Image (cartoon, rainbow, N blue to C red; front, top):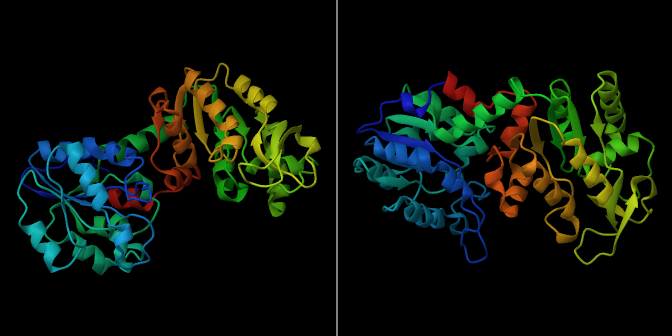
Length: 392
C-alpha cells in the first residue's frame, strides 16, 4: 500500500475519501470538529503539492435519499475556516452539474461533494456509482479510517478504478499505531476492554488474549463474566448465551497465567436515568431490582493499580454509561490514570475516544483512533475492505 507521499499530485484532481460525519446540535452547528482537524495534514499536503482537492464523505443515515437535514454545508463552512480558503459545496456527489464543477477546478481549489449517502449506490458498493464518483479525477486517496471497515462504493469499489491510489496521513497513522501496538508491543502489554456486549467484541477478546500480558474487562460486558462466576446481577445486562464462553475465556487466562481483572463493586440503579437513586455495592450483592451502570470505587482503584508498571496500554470501550453524569466516574477516573501512566497509550476510538476528548486530555495519549468499528475489526484480526482496496 502506497502512502500519499508516493503519489504524483501536481496538477491532478485528487479524490480524497474523508470521514466528516461530525456531530451537530439542533441548530446544525458542529459540536466536535476533531474528524475534520485530523484530516487537515492530508488536505494541506495535496494543496501544497499543487493538486485539486475533491473531497467526499457521508453524514448520518439519510437512507439513500437527498435530505437537507444531512447536508454537508456545515462541514464546508468549518473546513473553509480551518483551511483559510473557499470550499465549494457541490449540489450532489454525482450528476452533470457536479461533474462540471469538478472539470472546471484548478490547482488549489477545494470542492466538497454533497453527502455520499444521498444515493443508495454508496452503501451497496455499486460499481456504477463508483465510476460516476471517479469521473474526471486522476488520483484516489483514502483518509477515512473510520469507515474503512465498510465495503461501500467510495471506500472499496472506487479504489479499484485507479492506478494512482494510496493512503492519506491519517489512515497511515491509524494503521501504524495499531500494528505497533499489536505486533511489537513494549511489555508488559495491558488491554482494557469495555462497552456493552461480549458479542460485539468476542473475536477481539479472543485475539487479544493471545497477545496481551494482562487484561481489564469493564463496562456492561463484564456482567457476563461476573455471571459466569455465579453472581446474581439483578436487572443488569447479561448475555446468557455467552456465559459459558466467558467462563472459557477466564479459564484460558488462568491457564496462560495472565491476570484478568473484573469489577469487584458497582454503581447500581433501578433505571438508566440521571435522577435514579444509586447505590455502591459489591458485585455479589446487586439488588434484584437494580442494574449495574458503572464500576464502583474499589473496582476503579483495582484497575488503576493494574496499570502500574505497564509499558503499552490499548483501551477500547468505556467502564459504564459515561454519557450520564452519575455513571461517568469510573470511565473518567480511568482516563486520568491511563493519561498519567507513562506507557504507550492507544485508544480504540468510538465511545472511548469520545470520553477522552470530553476529558480534554487527548494530548496526553499516544494515539486516539478515529474509528470505533474499524479499530474493533482490526482487533479481531480482519482485513478492512478500505485497506485491501488500496493494496490490490
